[in-house]
Structures are given as structure tokens and as C-alpha cells.
Image 1 (tube, rainbow, N blue to C red):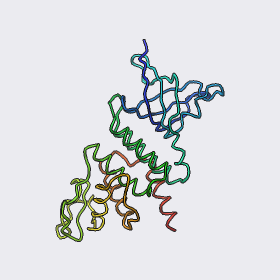
Image 2: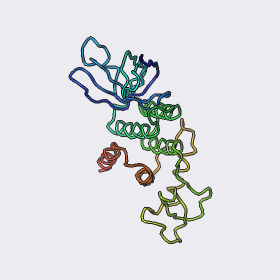
Image 3: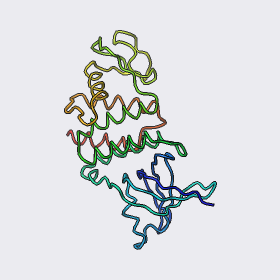
Image 4: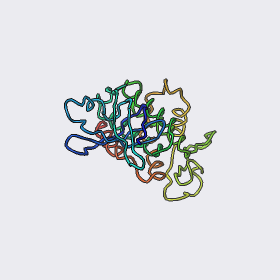
Length: 248
């Protein structure tokens, strides 16, 4: 007896399985991340290869035998290709970072409605070109950290020019006049804290633009992610390399 499921999903990544088939990893609201075997998808008559695109929003019909590790693809329908992501390599890199963070936040076999809606919303914002991709990345990371339960702490009232920011201690804990708390800490300016708080509290349809200290803020969040996750998303390094190239 096979378990059948119809659901919307976002394709996170895919890889070859055989000459005519592939496996893809998808994020669903009901079951978190799932692995799906798409048999014969590369055959011309299948009509599915153009649907199962990375970061595409799709409607899936899938089935799985008891105790099987993967679902089998029965049918699929394209809802949104997120085609605007292909306009800029950095949009693809940012999308890759967000997709990897979503996979961390949506374990298999666990309902993940909030993470799904988070990823769908920010991928669509990127694809539509609504806002600076660096600010979108910053806001999206702050949101997923909140969903994961370990958002960084910032002072409610900024009283010093500089603070120590310590991932090990959960964020800003000490003023710059205090001893350095541990080796993972770095100094953060009052302006950087103000920028992060502005991005955190802004209406996500009207995010701020042209924040000059944004690179420092993103570096800070990268340190925080690196400390709390097993590793940074693989797309992070490509994103940083492209940003360096763009500033030359």
C-alpha cells in the first residue's frame, strides 16, 4: 500500500539518479523536506523536466511505500519558476543561501508551514527584483534565526559607541569598555546595531535602502550562523566572492 500526497513544494536542489531519472529535494509545508525520485523525467515525452527546476514553486503528486526513504513522483505542475533569479548571479547565490537555511529549519517528516512561507516569500521578492538583495538577505537571515529559536540579541537602547558581539553569548552582551568575553566575539558599532534593528523592524514590503555599513552587518550574521550551525551554507562563499568582485 502506497502513501499518496498532493502538496505544493519548492525545489531546493536536484541531482542525477540514472540516465533518464533524477532525485530532487523539496520543501513542503506538511512534511518539511522530502526526497523525491522522478523516474524517466529526462525522456522527451515525460513533460516534467522543465517543471522540476531549482527554486521553482510546484504542485506535486507523490507516493511512497511504507519504510521507503524516498517518494516517487506521480505528477507535477509548475506554479512559479522564479525566473527573475537568473538575471543576476548574486540573486542565485542569495537564493542558494536561503534554500540551505530552509532545509536546516525544516527537518524531514515535520510540518514546516512557517519555514515554507518564509522561503516562498523571500524567493519571490528576489525574483521580482523588489529591493536590494543584500538587505533582503539580511532580513531573511534575521527572520529564519527567529524561527529557529536563536535570534541574536541586540540592546533595546543603544548607549555605547561600540559593543562586543558574541555568537557564543547570543549577541550583544557587553559594552566596549568591558574585557573581551571570548575568542568568538568581535566589536560592533552603534551604527551597525541601528542598521540591523532597522532592517529587523521594517515592513518587509518597504525595506530600507543604501545602508553603507551593510557588509559589516552581513559578516556579523555570517559569524553568528557559522557558530550556531554545523557549517555555513555552501552558497555563502560564492556570494562573498561575487560581492568582492563587484566592489573592485
